[in-house]
Image 1 (cartoon, helix red, strand yellow):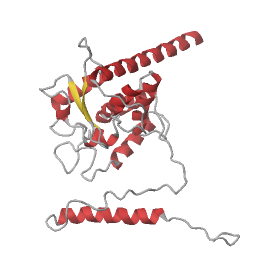
Image 2 (cartoon, helix red, strand yellow):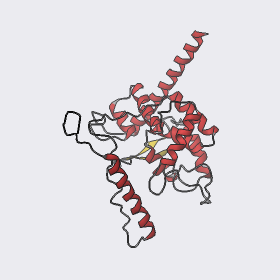
Image 3 (cartoon, one colour):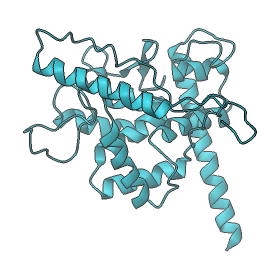
Image 4 (tube, helix red, strand yellow):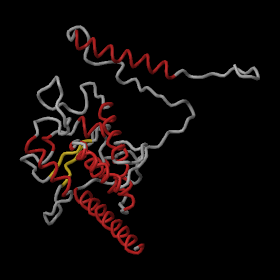
Length: 277
């Protein structure tokens, strides 16, 4: 009750979220212990829990710049987290969410023998998938830095998920995936924060910031709505307007525009540095 006697109704979201999260974890533990009794489908895993109070605005995800991506990748390699360095570039280039990058991207998706010049991209939310071309019409690589790193990983990595932890785990003789069997990425996010601090970047950045940076780069490169939709695998008219058919040609054109935008931005910085001398 407020000071003037009016009844104030508040939602105790934190209490409800903790209760449902506890139920979800208990179900997972019980299912592992009694697989024949407890069903594998956890009814608490898709509760749609929300921590934001009614009427509270959605906090936007900070968008990273290309220079911040470069600094993040350099710090990740310096700390021997090379898998995260490559994953960040992949998220920027192919506009993929971290759940897909670490939980779905399989080694068999990248340059399989039947399609050696393509990569299979799947949108985890709507199931949309496509084979992205890795070379343009002349045979030149569209993603030279990313392809070099993925090619090297493909030579030595195990079958299954591409991105695995860079450091050995005491309970496993093989590198563990960053994502846990319960689809948890908290450990990964803590490592990402560690890398961000080592790179002396804005603390509000997250792994998702690199995907947002890729979309921003696409907008700055004057990509059409169709090209943005093709790249992001969106199919809802509420996400990007004027839907058009996705084609390999659109993906090639969009990639070339984005790389040209990077080149122009670099020239602007170089000219500004030269003028200040």
